[in-house]
Length: 346
Length: 294
Image 1 (cartoon, rainbow over the protein chains, first blue to last red):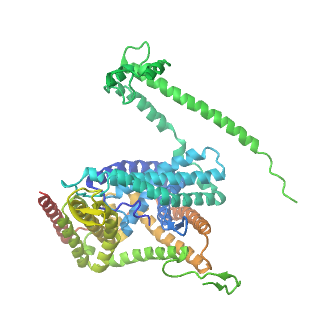
Image 2: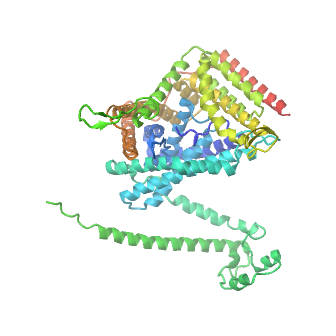
């Protein structure tokens, strides 16, 4: 099993890390349970149990990659595609709990971190990438390719998280003589090692398994691949954007200028002169709202807030316009393709 | 060496049944069979009349978690070695084969930790006073001490985790979780998932054995991969269908959303004594670790 790569055993993470991951996972499990209960109702127990059983079993298959070598897939992206990302959080967490409690795979104290890497990062990254790459009306080959690419990137993302968790240990806890107390490799070694291992081998196992199963399901059970409720609701995104807009005046409180965004006077202060090219090109374009200030508004906070609203509306408007243009073009292509099938050969 | 197939006279290379070069189906079937055997052996060990098997599941779960946390807080190598010895004592008193226990802890967890950590003892990763040199490689004292500490910590933690796995029936673990206020939905899902895992493990093992019995040659990588993903999709479809069947069965038996347990757990004097002893051991361990570090 992919133990070395992803299942973190006890002893590798210090209490400062594993306690944080337990605290991070508790609200995630709570939200996931509520969402799943709302969508699956009382059917949730058998569906999640079988989802967890499948998550466990898929890790037992030997997937051939190249030259006779085989590996085990985690399958979390596949489960997110089938059940939705929130149900995948619960199903993969339960599969990990059974691996830990029944087979001793993965640590008890590290259970929170393992769930974060494999039951949160992989399903969410994989699911939303898959939906993004698939689009609204995917062809079967695009769906298969999207599933493979999403699974590959998602497992690499999970591995990078695990590498980060290992890599921060030497900074958090070490003896006075430099002796490591937990995982011994720093970020510069742990993150590339985990990322490379998954980019070169386990990522391909995951991609082949996920794409292969999605290809088979398209032929045999395409209803399982329909979009899950989590993909449809965008209300939370609008709420989050609203909160971020309201928080933008905090930027006014920060002293100084962001590194590298200096104006001519600040450049002169730092290096003693203003480069001629900088001076010439710097005055080419006059912004409508320089330094996020609104012309005619004296209060900096209110001016900043107005700039945030205008900026957001511009970005959303342009994106919306481009999206609508692309959607119209695609629907034109689709209607052009729906010609009657050729008559069968006699 | 190739031989003609008896039914079709096609020249085929024999498929190896043992050792390296076994077919994909045989390797997977073997590992699935091992998993099923592990579960059955765990249940058999959990039924033996040993020290830990007699303890109330809730108290046992709490105390073994306490030991796992204590292991993560200890910084002294010697104290960690003492905790490893303690796991062996607990294993012996619980009638767990100490040799099998040590083999599992040291070979699966300790050796793996050693192999992962040993390059960190090089001066390149952990600077410090040189302990010895091996050609161009210099191993430092703090580096080697770090490797030893990590291996000892992983082995001690794996020992306590294995004691939970080996001395507690899965049904008792679920009962303990339920008594410790874990939501009913989670406990019920865990219980159902474990039963379905065993069923699916057998199904998948049989699928692989069926393939093995009909295999004349080791297929190409692509053929094998296509076969594996087809089987994965089959297991997924079967899982979804079984979920519907199980739900119908639950409704037919009068499922209303609650999951009452008939067996009541009782904490006796021996359980309280075990809890007090465990808390004392953990406190003494932490104090000893602090003194060793001072």
